[in-house]
Length: 632
Image 1 (cartoon, helix red, strand yellow):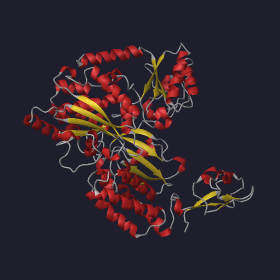
Image 2 (cartoon, one colour):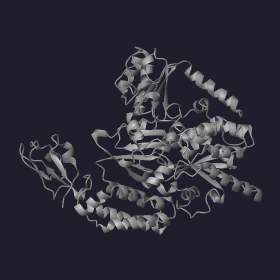
Image 3 (tube, helix red, strand yellow):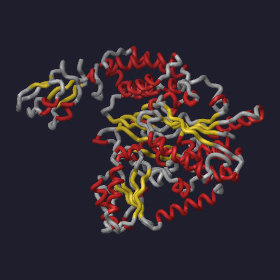
């Protein structure tokens, strides 16, 4: 079966026969859903259906829909009716919800994600009217949470491989490259280099290589960078778990566009579910003649191998990733030559990340003009983010480029919990910068973030509140990048080590005001002379916190205090004589016996013994334990 029309007809018939006017009960079983107990919900749903013959529905597992803080999720799709979403649910609630909906026609439940004022379906809002989803624009996440990622027919029935069919049957490789250029797609894994320009360079070099050496076994490679090593980032993982075929299709189109023969998906081994679903998807694509020899009956052949990475953060850098695939230690190489000129085994290679490749099928199936309607003049399309940290609604989101930080944090994220104030947002992971509340109305696009001192990166977005110490944040991220440095170049290997030593001294109350000058002198030197992007961007958290939160550094050094009360060496715990009732709860909870006092008498903390573990403050019901930020 090589004709796409026939494949699409088969997929539509398969999906129609599976559903056949039956309802569908979808359980979110991405990594987040499984960790939250999704498998127990799946078992409860199957058990409920087995015990109730009147419930005519199929139970399916889907990937992460993005609203992770509500996992585990239970969605119900009844033909012709709005999608019902519930979460977080328990196995017991699962049984009750299904019986209410299918037997008693009752749709309201305390775990409904959308408010249902009436039991009539006409009163149920669409899923995308839920406040978390309403401001979002889903292109990359178009299928995540909606299709069964382990069934190729689900993907094809939702226009899957339509872009590949158009590329192979109706377009030349040059036209495909031009379509990508016209769309204005920029790489979604780093600084935003235009994908079409990278493809153009590779295509030219592959063409030259074919003419000069006609007997080579391979002339070009496409690599999907799914290493995703940023702390708190899970965009690529969720896409691979929820929609693996979209990335495979994007890679095949890219291979056709540049004239490549093979592709590699470089995925970190810590993503076992993503790897399992990728393996299955690759097998399914080969079975349907969508991958391998003479794809869709054409002269174009292209195959993909899966390479599991060992988890080195530096392997997210292009040349380090190539070295790892070749079997060497993941260490960067000087550029030029760039991979598009001489990459894997010396052959022209393009490397795009998961999100970049996921956009390609949409551009090819709908056209560059339609895809480029979203976004700004220079930053087209949408961007996914892992929204984490001190925000009410954490999860995977996708927004149109040009949306402000304020909209993301408050409209989608629901604001800062516990009535606290927003303090900073870090974009771009450990290589990004920390932006203060004065930048809340900053638009999220490549140019605006760079001007503010940060980067888009792959899409990590960590929100911090007033209880966060920005000096400690800079120390934390520099600890990560320093540990992950491959050590090949001196500026990164030693420069980040010296910066980390200075930051550690400051958080321990041993800093000097001259340390700030040293940081500001080291940072640009490391940025300008490091071999790869890891070292070049490592100073960003330090530079932005010095720029926007310098007063906190000065408080640590000059006043001997941590304004946020987080640096243990600069705080002390005391018990308020007025609020303490002598209940002895803190005394019993103290792991080092630093608290003394008889029952119904005011307790005392011995600061020489206290390890500042914060247990006493957490267990006190009377808010009698105080943190003093001025130990000296």
